[in-house]
Image 1 (cartoon, rainbow, N blue to C red):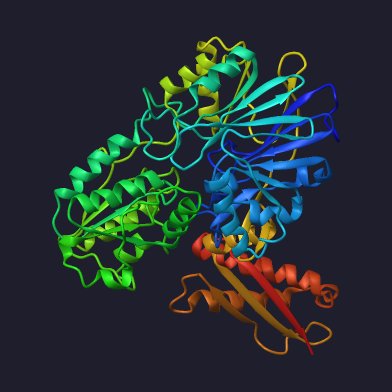
Image 2 (image 1 turned 180 degrees about the vertical axis):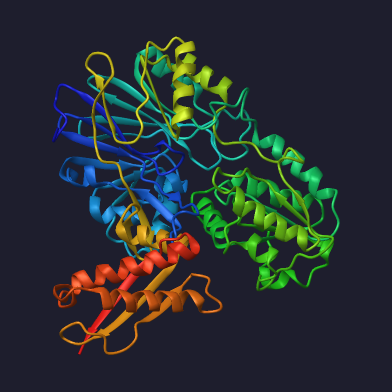
Length: 550
C-alpha cells in the first residue's frame, strides 16, 4: 500500500496507541495523508543516557510528498514536543491554535528552526482545508490552555478526533467544552470517534480546577515557614491558583523554573493571565521572611534538573527549603516516574521538610475524562465506530468495551502500526506497518533498539572488559596479555589476574593457522575473557580485544 485510494479512508497511529505519550496519528484518503499531533515521551531507567523518546516517522517520511500538513491539538509535550526534532524529515506545514503555536515557536527558536518551519495559527473554532480533509477545531477543556478536538470531514463522513480532554464545568482559564458542537456532530452523523483512553478505569468524573483552587488556598493558609508548591508547568490554571493562594495567605509568589516562565510568557502573549499576581524574582526571595514567600516550582515528576529537585538537594542557587518548611505536590505521578518522585520526596523529608501530596489533600484533578464523561460524550456524538487511542493496550481494550455499552455499533483496537480502513464497509485492520522509536541522544536521533543503546544496556548491567595482546607476525606473544575492567568489581585484582592467565593459556593453545588470523584470535580471546568473568561473577561483559602485531 503506497498511497490511500480515492475509495477508502484510513487511520494509522505511529505513536500514542498502546502507550500514553508520543502521539502521532495519520488519516489517509484520496492519495493524501493528514498528521494529527507529533509528540514525545520520556525515557525510563532501561534507556541509558536517554531522556526523550519519540515515534519513528519512517512510514510517513517515505510518503512525505503526500503529507498535506501536521495539525496540533494542543501544547502538551506528548502532542507537539517532537516537531522540532522530526520536522526536518517531514517538511510539512504545521497548524495550531495561538497558544500551541506560541509554545512551539519558542521550541523552534531553541532548535534553530524558527525561520524554516511554516507555522499557521488557526483561530479557536477555526475551519480550514488540507487536501481532501475539511477541518474544524472544537474547544474542549483539559489541563492546558486551548485544548482542541477536531472534526475531520471527508466524503466518507466525519471523524471526531478528541485530542486530550475532560468536561470541567469551571475550568478557570479558557472556555468551556463546546457541548453544542459535539451534539451537532452527532446530529450530522459521525463516522468515527478517535478518543482519549487515559482514565477509562476511573469511575465518575475527573473533577474541576475550581475545587483545587479553593483547597490550595486553605492548605497554604494552614502552614508556617516557607511553602513550595510544584505542579505541571503547562497547567496554567493551577499555576494561577497557587499564586492566588500565596497572595490570600499574605505571601509573595516566586516562580522557579524555566518551563514555568516560558509557559506564562506564551499565555500572556496570547492574552491570558494578564492580571497574574506580581512575582518576586528568585534572587530577591531570600530577603523575605520565611512565612512571606511561596515558591512555585517545576519538578513535580522528580526531574533531576528541575527547581524542586535542586531545593531537595540544597543545590538551588537562590532558594532554600529547610526543617519546618512545606513542599506541596499539586500533581499526580505519571506511570513510570514513581521511583524518581519517591526519591525527591524522601530527600525533602530528610531535610525536615513536610511533604503533602494528592494522597493527603484534594489538590489535584486529572485533565483526562473518567468513565462518566466518556459515556456522556458518546451519547452526544453517537459515532458508528469507536477507535480508542492515548492509552496502553489495557486502557484501549477497556475503552472499547465501554463504547459497546454506549451502543456504538463497531469498536476497533489498533495499537501503533495497525493500519485501519474506516470506510467503506465495516472498520477493519488491513495491514501492519513499522512503528519504531527514536531516542534523542545529545543533539542526534538514534533508534531506540539500535546497536549503540543495546551496548549501553549491556555495559550498564554487565560492565566492560578490554584485552590487549601483543604478538609478532606469526602470532607468538611478545608480552604478557593486559586487561582493563570497567564497571566490574575487582578490588583485589584477582579477577584481572585470572583473565590474563586465561588469555596466556589461550595464546599457547592456538593452532598456527589461528595465530595469523586476527579475527579468529580476537574471537578466541573474547570467549576466554567472558568465560572467566562468567565463572567468577555470573556476568557477560561487553568485551573488546585489541591485537598489536609487531
